[in-house]
Image (tube, rainbow, N blue to C red):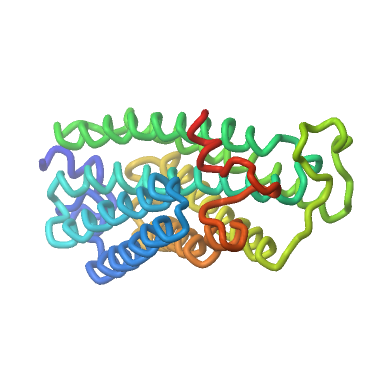
Length: 305
């Protein structure tokens, strides 16, 4: 244990801590409570609106964040113990990834309802392409997190694992950036009524221009806000890992609390208020609905891919 402390806590040599500081207990408790509350609400909303894919996305995100912040709370009492440090490394780096996947599905549904002729990608491709990229980033981050945590457990340097994590989070940042640009282009073209292609060439059931109802406005605004929060978090984690395990960023607690914990909290609670089951469903019909009555729901389409 002592041989690893100089590697991970050179900025606080007087502390027997893997973090370079001692996590503040009340902050950890606050985030555990907030994530638990949001996750419980998401589970209830998924069941009430029958939007089942919100369980493996928003709910799994919440569970991972609960575990990660519970581990940091554990570390507030035992900052030199390897087990909670390993746990928080893995859980907090992976936690937002399922939530990001939910944003891809939601935007695809919004595009379908407003008119896919304004989108560079079809609603189906938003789900397939971005969701697949998100899975790849999840796998890379999981491998890197496991490798870094294993190195901590063996009292060796976690740098190689951290580099893999950096690759995964940087790839995720690139995916979110492209996603934001595609979404921004879609809304720009929709508002200016500048379709990319003739709606007549699209498959039957597509519309040229759907109505931007109050519910869709709320959904689009919430989606934009939560995506920006997740983008900020990805920028922070990329810079944090690039700065190294002994850098100023990773050993400064307030950066993590605000740019990771707070950003993901804002994103997951935004989805509670701007929930697709409420805002994207047709009155009297459970789950997400497309613009045409009788068309397959988004859950059915996702399950086919």
